[in-house]
Amino acid sequence: MNPVQRQSYGRTRRRRSHHALEGALPTVCPVSGNPKMHHRACKESGYVRPGLRISVPKLGIGINKD
Image 1 (spheres, one colour):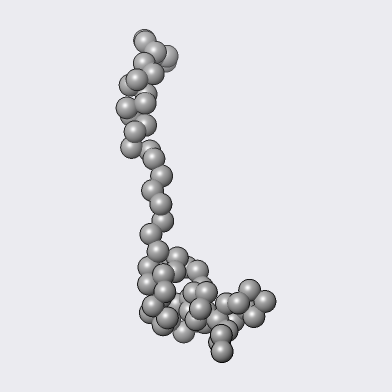
Image 2 (spheres, one colour):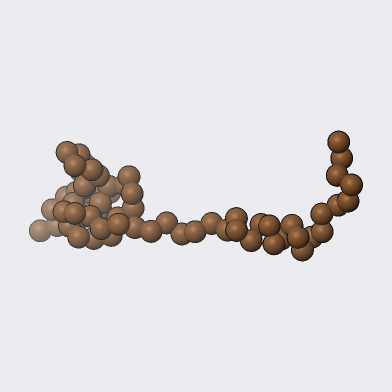
């Protein structure tokens, strides 16, 4: 069944006003204290989650900068 009247542009825009995307908020790495995104490796320490640290020397992730 079709709608009786077309929904106005303003009403459509008001409905969509809550659909805006929000920016992702970083958390603090427990090892280095630097901000890091969820489910990502920390650039400095290589920490991902408890029991998992990675090291990628080519990208500079998880290597000592002495």
